Amino acid sequence: MTTSAELIEVSERRSAHNYHPLPVVLHEAHGAWVTDVEGRRYLDFLSGYSSLNFGHGNEKILAAAQEQLRNLTLTSRAFYHDQFARFCAGLADLTGKDMILPMNTGAEAVETAIKVARKWGYLVKGVERDKANIVVMEDNFHGRTTTIVSFSTDPDARDDYGPYTPGFTIVKYGSADAIRSAIDDDTVAVLVEPIQGEAGVLVPPDGYLTQVREICTEQNVLMIADEIQSGLGRTGRTFACDHEGVVPDIYVLGKALGGGVVPVSAIAADEDVLGVIKPGQHGSTFGGNPLACAVGSAVVEILRTGEFQVRAAELGGIMHARLRELVGHGVVTVRGRGLWAGVDIDPSLATGRQVSEALMARGVLAKDTHGSTIRLAPPIVISEEDLLWALDRLAETVDSLR
Ligand SMILES: *Cc1c(COP(=O)(O)O)cnc(C)c1O
Image 1: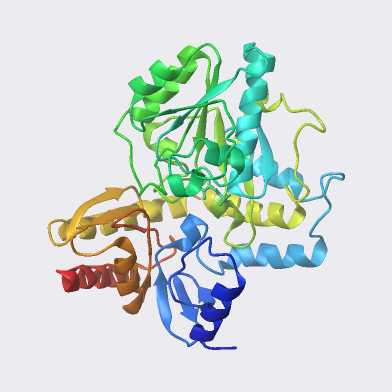
Image 2: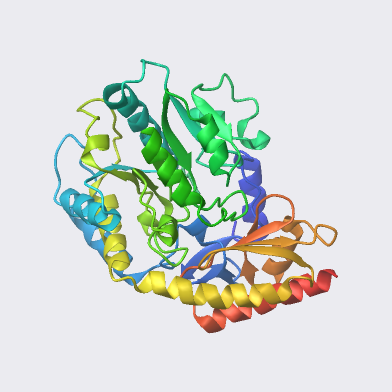
């Protein structure tokens, strides 16, 4: 069992069909390049949905992981370990917050933020028990738990998973007025992606995040920014909220926090918020484990210098300039920020899936979202030359469809 065809056949027969992967079987990767089992090379323009911002096999991250693998990998939170303090203090400094609550996956971090916001609502704001509501956005993506899919507006993500968790009010993304109207005395939080990734890299109107911040402050409601995909360098800043100088009450982080090595997620908040959680009230066996903390600390170190943020901004400028040239030539619109773009292909030419397959044949791996949109998010370590090469392949692909 060694060829792509054989491995794909067994994968499809012996695993649930909860994904529809491109027909490529990867074997190894370095930087922005991945190689399949037949030795074909591709540029990775998905980066594990921005989990690989710092590249495949990043040396600093690998070194930290390898050293930690030899020393200590798991303790559970029943004991302290020597990587925990550094990770929490480092990430707290990076976010400008007092405290960290580490988890593993993004969905767990979102769940953590929801629990903290509800508890804060009851203990601090004085909302009547079990009455709290949270304002969320249309076309959101926050993960796959039963509570999170309860407030998804994507039928694929939500249908047939009821009964659903109550306590969420869904409003239009990008409208501050919609949030204002939805908030009532029992609202404890507004949960928002500063840029909606899965929805197609949707950037809200200028000033939106500032208004969300103002409304939350005025109404005594927590602003929760899900920066799992938008954060940690991708948009050219440490956090997408930084573009408007906005500081949420709770940052939700994941994906790239694990350096492409292990799942690491966390929420960051000040003590008046995170302090509501007491021993026994929330937790995770693997959350904040030594390996995760060592890797997470390496990521924090990398981000502290600001180099990746600057690089994402510079390469992003180059990428968006090139993509704009394609508008009107098979591309309808291009959105995004930093080294992150959503590209709407003329739906009469091809589906996003067909474009992704055609790109793959030319040596570039990207993934469609809804309809004819593809998203581009190469590792930030990509060279300018490779970036331009891949964008030429996209131009060629779109041209071949016309
Ligand atoms: C990926 C993602 C999540 C969920 O993270 P998992 O690690 O897959 O659970 C949540 N929110 C956003 C914005 C994401 O992009």
